[in-house]
Amino acid sequence: MAERIYSYQHLLHFTQNVFKQIGCSEEHAATAAKVLLSADLRGVDSHGVARLTGYVRLWEAKRVNAKPDIRIVHETPSTAVVDGDSGLGLVVAPYAMQVAIDKAKNVGTGWVSVEGSNHFGIAGYHGMMALEHDMIGIAMTNASPLVAPTFSSEKLLGTNPICVAIPAGKEFPFVADLATTTAANGKLEILQRKNLDTPLGWVQDANGQPTTNAHALKSGGALLPLGGDREHGSHKGYALGAMVDIFCGVLSGANYGPWVPPFPAYVPMPQSMPGKGIGHFFGAMRVDAFRPASEFKENMDNWLHRFRSAKPIEGEEKVLVPGDPEREMEQSRMEHGIPLLEPVAEDLQQLAAKLGISFELQ
Image 1: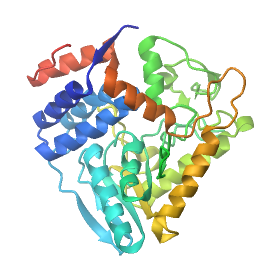
Image 2 (image 1 turned 90 degrees about the vertical axis):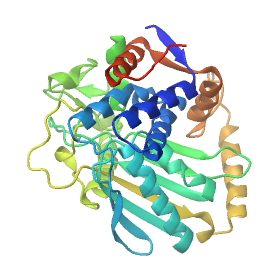
Image 3 (image 1 turned 180 degrees about the vertical axis):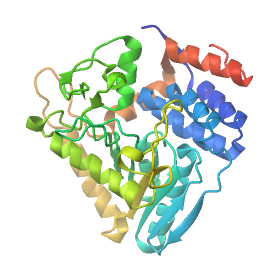
Image 4 (image 1 turned 30 degrees about the vertical axis):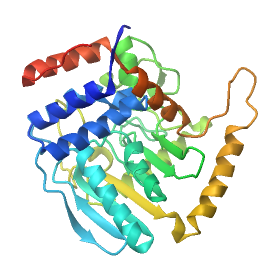
């Protein structure tokens, strides 16, 4: 499928204008645009500007508050609960992660759960906020039910990603950012746009049987937990997704399980929702709360160097550490531009025309 190339600055400026056009403040629009574009830069195309129209539709459906009163509603020296007031998760999540970082500065660690939020982009952006403070960052979110637990024909969990970001000294940091499903829904959407099948183990049909149909979710199917099936450890992926859901939803007072609000604005909201919006969970741990940061980073450099220098199997160029592919992609795309599939570029053009702003092709 044909692609068009745009510079990071071009897409950042356009995205910021879109958020301002729906009523976001200059500060919130800048934050939301930066978070969203971080996905495109890091090669997570499913969570970048391809979703921009979806956020606007949520605002049109009055499910996103463009002028939220984001606030702490409960706290202790090391913990807090943040109410996102139905704001963009792209704005609520950085606020909450900063609260966790500030608490860690004071008492060593900070833990923040969030209620009343929306889709927050990639978990990696939020977890990596801790790195510049010599802290370990943790970020996770629950999501709308697209995933069937092992042995279930019902969709009860979201893709429920987890990010853990760990600082280093001379080496590039360790950044694990992963869905708790075999594949994120966004990857399914990309295959749908390209009219391709999925690998076996990504989805099941309405009867719970394995399928490679990328459109399976539209006819009652479900995404599968990490592992794909019981023989390959899907019960472990199910457990990971369940833990994220409980930390993000049950602990915060947000919705959880089958009651988490859907991202597509046209999908009806669940009945009898027990909480407020989507939930997130963030952690920040000051390295020097455990040992001197210089010693830790020296050992972390040693760990990272050893793994990156591991002997690759035949046919592979090198062994990677979590975060390496995304970092290399970010460097490349910042220099050479961000490719957008033709349907995504056309969607942004239509959005620009609808909002009365410019989206000039390069």
